[in-house]
Image 1 (cartoon, helix red, strand yellow):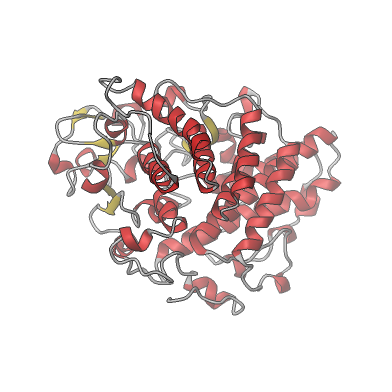
Image 2 (cartoon, rainbow, N blue to C red):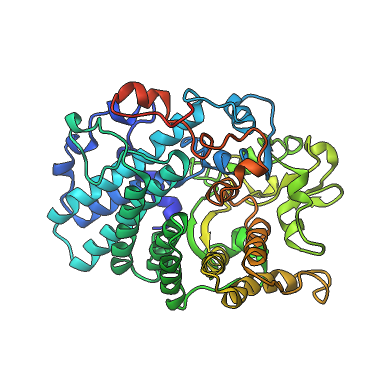
Length: 476
């Protein structure tokens, strides 16, 4: 059953999003023991653990806003109906900003569901190979949710099993310990998961996704040798490659392709499993909300002739989802293109069916280039960097002049080349703010950013009130 379909069965297991995670009775007490009787029960419970991934209206997943609105790629547009987005743009948000509370609850909902599966799986009568695969998926999903949490909040409470009520109120676990848990769990998941899922199970976690997430966790710790080790594990699978056409990563009919390492499925079914970014990012001139308006600085950051500019940025007098884009479509004169669709091909704007590719092979290659650069292995770093540039060059109007191979004389020049390539290749794919923070340059790039404060976002006040063991991030 395709992931986009099996999300429909998630509601029976999901924790309510109306209250903080810490004031909910653990789901394990809701007769979960009697539920887990068969392999089908375990699979159904696992399916529910995928639901919080979605960028749909029900989830209210604002990870995109933390990554883009606070970065130099976008500003908050729209009609002001979401004041939290305006606060993110201006760095005036507080622990009471709604988007943080919604996001925190959503991630812990996914974690609780994963722990429910992991706790009960050993007692279910099933073939060991199926048990291992289900365990691998649950470990990977839990790792993914925790990775997002530490990106956004830093230290967070770590739960590796369903906790009884008297053990829910615990202090925050240091970020390094959470990342270590992610790395260990992804390593185990990689040994349990298949390299390829059957076509009928497209969207479930794979061995490559687990190893790639481990590589990303090591990247955030600047453990460059470990990054290379796990990038090597991904490449050794022999499954991934760059698509000849960059745009195939953002088209409905070419999704889940050879470049996709970890892709979150969406479907246009009018049942709440569609990609809401389609409406949230679309210009208001086309009945979108225009909540992310692309900055002129980003539009002008591409090298001359780089085709990724027109694949990523909508600009004046260019085709734009069934019409021609005009400056009036955005207060900045530019809008994003990725994850958006012509309104004629979706039954309703909020249910787009362009998937979100959280990790694609181009990024894995750029991790490799970055790690090699930081290890001062400059000549080796040029190969993965050039592989990414060569794909873009081939799609340029004049490949003989566009995007020449990077020629650098030292580590700092290569570092800047890799960072520029990430910006061009991965624009509006929800990486930019977190890149600026981990590189330590956010204060130099983002007006209003305060070093020592804005590297992380505030712990939601609702959670602080529910759990007196939590300590707020500095400056909030």
